[in-house]
Amino acid sequence: MNIGLITSYVIAGIILIAILSMNMSVSSSSNEITLSQVTRERAETISDIMSNDIQKIGYNRKSKTNPVLTVAEGKKIQFRSNIDNSTDNSVEIVTWEFTNTAVTSTPNPSDRVLKRTVRDASSGSIISTTPFKSGVISFRINYYKKYGSKRSDSLSTPVTGSALNNIKQLYIALKIQSKEKVYNGSNGHYVTSIWEKRFSPPNLEF
Amino acid sequence: MAAYSEVIQTMAAMVIFSLILLSANRMIIRNTHMEVQGELEQEVVAIAQNVIEESRTKEFDENTQAAAPPAHIPGDFTDPNNLGSEITADSTSDDKDGDGKVERYEFDDFDDYNGWQDTVSTEHGEFKIWAKVFYVDPNTYAKTSSRTTFKKIQVFVQNEFLKKGQTDSLQKYHLEFIRNYYAD
Image (cartoon, rainbow over all chains, first blue to last red; front, side, top):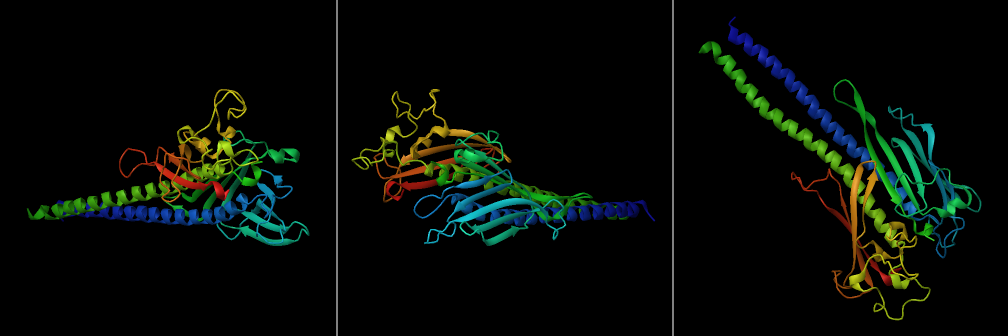
């Protein structure tokens, strides 16, 4: 067996290993971008519904509701609104709460249920409950009494009593992770997407 | 020569493989870049929307804050050259706390955002933001130097990681909103 043949076998082996490694990297990158897109779509679904609700805080057809905000905690917000724009001016109580209930249907151990509940304000009966099991791992609400305050200058939570009337802006941050891990080497990681927005609901202005 | 033909063939394979590897690496970098860009652009939209939504909660003009509307519309609106926050010696001044500057929480009308700028800190880093407000023509919605019942706000956002293509210059994103006095 000549030296040239042996050398070429060794080099061919190295190339094969390199091709395998490259294939894994490309595949992992593609997986990551796909999962990232899916995660962002999930965040967008929740943010669309939430944006629609938050902008309508205190809304009714003729005047704003009284009270407007009823609960203002770090992981829970409750407010009154004619959320379905009903012509009889009936008001609903809308609650968004980040619960401690783990989502058992996914392999991700960090995700929890984010729950939206709509109740009839006069009877207290539940109109709808929507549990979001889309990989939400963190949900935070900050409250501000001045427009454009620095993120760190939020009111301490829970905001209670007459201080609820001072709230002008809300900042909501939502962190969502993919259900599955992306593997690149031995340790996999969950793809994370963050959605955050500061809201200025018109009915908190005055 | 025959003994080295395999080596030469292997080296040729290495060259071809290196080219493929370079291309694959470029693709991975591009994927990562797109991922980051998508996440940051989502933030850009949220920041700009916040300013637009906030501006909509204010009065249309400095002179439309009284209970009764101005006698002449749009003749009594603020002069197009004076759009922005006002510091005056009387009670109409926007500088409510008297510190010599008008801050965002002191804005009381839509055009107070004209010329305003700030740096916003977020989970995704810092974003530079600034705004322009001007009157627009009711038919063409183009900028006009005369008073009309329409005003447009343009919100600009920049981030150090969002660049124009492969260049080093920063991408300037802008969102705009047209407001009509009679639609308030």
